[in-house]
Every structure is written in structure tokens, then in C-alpha cells.
Image (cartoon, rainbow, N blue to C red):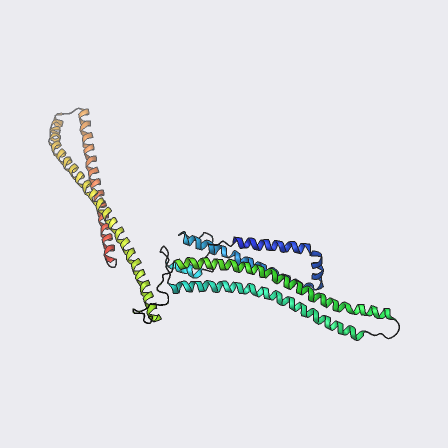
Length: 380
């Protein structure tokens, strides 16, 4: 999308040129400003507010452009930036269909574009109001100064007398009387100067802000046009070139198409859940097979241990008989060690069997929960 940076550069260059011009004409402008500081100060304050407003409008397009570019690239919104203001309706649609491909009907796309255009027009109306306000303040100062001039000239004419031979005194009175009309003319011309010059500056900035907003709206419209599902140029036409289907039937068909899309997405999610459950059951079956093999191995070991105990029992009885006749300490120690080892072996086998039984129970519980979850899914 078009970045608003180039429009900001144009505005900055224009403001720099205006600043240089003001600096070059500073002496004359300062005298014109001091003719009526209150009204001229108000005009300059409105001018500053208009400049800030237009620059702010262009700056606000930056987060909107970055949000749309991240959306087009399939990336999450930029961190540290809130919900966009101009494309708030589009952001709400994306929040409802997070992780899905965005597809709009012509009616929805037109509604989104109309909402964005209304917000842009609202911002531009405020900027145009500042331009008109500067012209109005300049004209107000003009009429105010003219009113003062006309009133002062009438006073001078009434007070002008040529009685007597003192022409110099009469001329001095005329000069003093003309000071008030000249002050009124200065007020009129200075306010017109600042008002029209301010409207020129704000008007150029409003032009650049409007171009930036138009470029943003055009790029957004082109992108949304690629996401819009077209259902016909002006409605659905019957066979044989008859009249088109009524609008409510077309709206019903569009709603049916959207419902079918939602149903397709739900079926796709159910299929993904079923595949995931099948994978879990397959993994559980593999674990149960492994546990079965381990149980068989341990069972064979237990059988061998029992057989070994049966074989050792006669030997132990013989040793007991021999012990009645007397054994040395070394033989008794070996017998005691053998007894301890056999006891430990029996305990280890018992613990292993209990642990195996607990694992089998937990696996069977997991299998039962998985089967119950699959049975509760709709359409399973």
C-alpha cells in the first residue's frame, strides 16, 4: 500500500518554504500584526490548529497501513498498536474469523468501504472548516476595520472647519482626524492578509492530507475487490433472458452460501479432531502393545524365578539338615546372603508387578476417556 511518508515530506517542504518567506518579510508582518494583535493572534492560533490537524490526519494513516500490510501478509497485528480506527469494522470481521481466509460478499465489502469513506470525510470536513474559518476571520477583520474607517471619516468631516485664516491649524486637525480611519484600514488589510495567507497554507495541507487519504482508500478498495465473491453483475438472471430474481431471494441465497461456508469450516474442524483422535488411539494402541510385551517378559521372568526357587528348595532343605550337624561361619554367611538376595528379588518382582498394574490401569482410563470424547462429538 501507499505509504503516507511522501505526503508528509511534501507538507514539511511547504511549511519550510512558508517559514523562509515569513522570515524574509518579518519586519512588515510584525508591523501588520501589531495593528490589531488580538484578532491577528486569533487568526494565527486557528492557523496553527489547522496545521496540526492536517499533519495528524496523515500521521494516523501510518498505523492503518501497517495493520493492513500485516493482515495481507498473514502476520499478527503489530505489537504496541491498538485496534485501528478507520478499518475498525474490518478488524471486527477478522476477530470473528481468526485463522481463516477472509472472504466478503459484495454487500459486506461495500458496507466496509462506505464506513471507511464516512470516517475519512468526517476528518476532512473538520479540516475544511478550519480553512473556511480563516477566511471568515479575515473578512470579519476587514469589515470591522472598514466600519471603523467609515465612522472615523464621518467624524473627521463633521469636525473639519475652515473658518478663519489659520490654514495650518486646520490641516493639523485633519491629519489627527485621519489617524483613526487609517488605523481602521490597517486592521482591515492586516486581518485580510493573515486570514487569506492562513487559508492558503491550511488549504495546501488539506490537499495533501486528502491525497494521502484517497491513496489509502484506493489501495484498500483494490485489495478488498480481490477478496469479494461476485454473485452476478446486477442480480441473478433467469433463463431465457427474463427478469432478475428479487433482491430478497438473492440475499437469501447469499446467506445460504455463507451458511454452507460455515458448515464446511465446521466439518473441516471435526475432521481435524477425528484425525487427531485416531492418532491418539493409534499411539495408545502402540503403548498397550509395548506394555503387553513387557508383561509377557516379566511373566516369563517370574516363571523362571519360581522354577529357580523350586530347584533351590531341596538344596536349602539339605543345607538345613547339614546345618544340624554343624556348619562353619563362612557357609552360614553364604547361606544368609543367598536368603537376603532371594528376599530382595521377590520384593523387586512384587514392586514391578504392582507398578505394571498401575500403568495398565492409567492407560485403560485414558483409552476410555478418548473413546467417550469421540462418542460425544456430533456426526461421529
